[in-house]
Image (cartoon, rainbow, N blue to C red; front, side, top):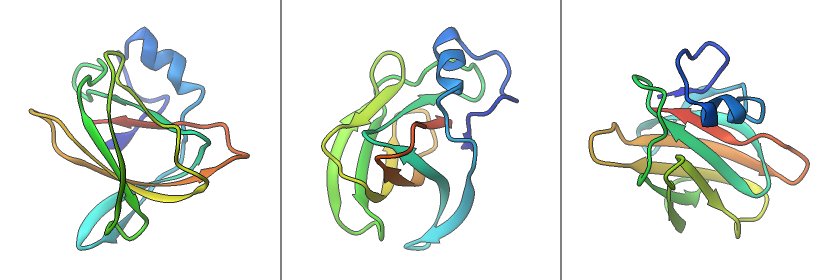
Length: 126
């Protein structure tokens, strides 16, 4: 899994539109023994886009669960829509551990910090 960036080729129009709002920084760290992509600061509400690395198409129907920063307490769950978009409108500013899963895709694990002053979204190419 990598952050969607300007270097990703053959993305659909929806991804092209999302690029300008995507967080451009990420690092890796371990949470509960799993490697996690830290996407940095995301705007409020916590929202994002998931796409396929091989086709550039959106990944619809992926379940995304949000957890406390340590990954131990599940807070909310949502599913990507037909355009690959997801949102957690009720989460407040803070740091969240997100896990995503869908048939045929490697489970995603990301960490984001949500701020009411940021304007970026979490964009993931799976």
